[in-house]
Length: 306
Image (tube, rainbow, N blue to C red):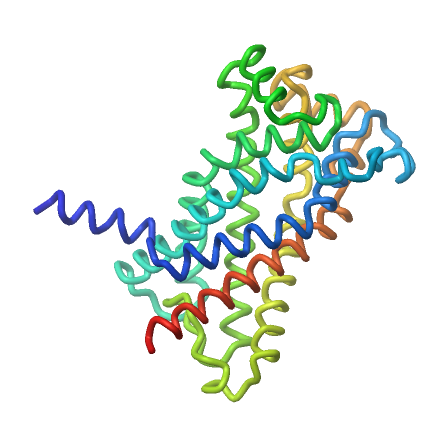
């Protein structure tokens, strides 16, 4: 009996809902493919040597197709990781909501959003971190262009630890970032979309809300964009340190040494470096991702109910 209960709880946490799985996979593929060059430029800016940022023409890779360095890795690992992340987040939020049954005030729902975001991050980071290490080092352009050769190189010289370099740092980064993001996103959806409840993952059809499909999608876009800009701005210093850590190959030592190096060679600007390009990447990437996710999920639910 206890085993059956545990299995049910695990299934709820994983939230193996076909609508969530298909929506997450589609959103990951489309958003990553469109926005990957901006992510490459973010990595190159944040890991550029020296205290002064080189001109943009020097940061752009040659040939330009190398802006897509690491994309196959990002798609092969990132899509399953995003699917796992969204599944755990949706499942955790729904499960905790049912168990705790809070009222609709932010003060009571905020801990639920934060807990669900952290649980999702801890589980998906097992997949995310090797992806980020490979992708970031390919994008930085200092380890060649072959993902397979780089994978072998890291394993031979750094072993498994090399693939999980920055795991704790990325968790420290994305825990606060995703907690801030999901809190803002859920609150904004509740404010902007009539009939949306934070207790569920779906809004009623646009026709029942007195909105057109375009108006509903614009409200999803506004919610995601504002939430993303807020979360990215708050956590950029941590992201800059993580980028250095993951592309260093252990040359600078641990986090403390990297922070000291960045402060010595760049001062405060080293920790704010890349914030513009990070926002320029994160907002369209996240907006496209969440728009596709919400739309596919709603369409799937509608087909499933017919």
